[in-house]
Image (cartoon, rainbow, N blue to C red; front, side, top):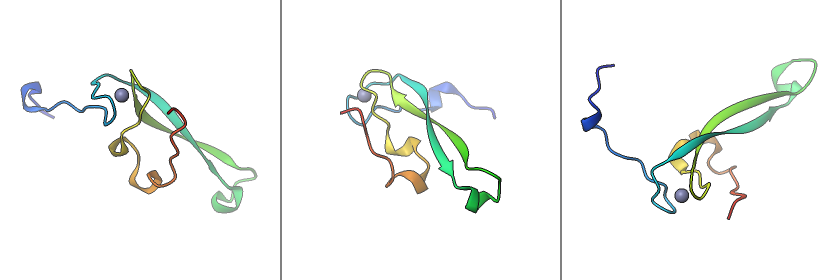
Length: 74
Ligand SMILES: [Zn+2]
């Protein structure tokens, strides 16, 4: 990918307008009845959380999970 950084735009935290993020991990449980494995499995999903206020922007979440996600840090 030949991308010029000056052609990019910053992504801000929806809450505090911060521009620094760190990677955190959402973990989903996959039932053994769905996966046909002998036991439930865990599915780690990397998302980005605001470095300052811990908010996770909607756009960082997989669309299927947005309604599931409950913000714990308020
Ligand atoms: Zn923030």
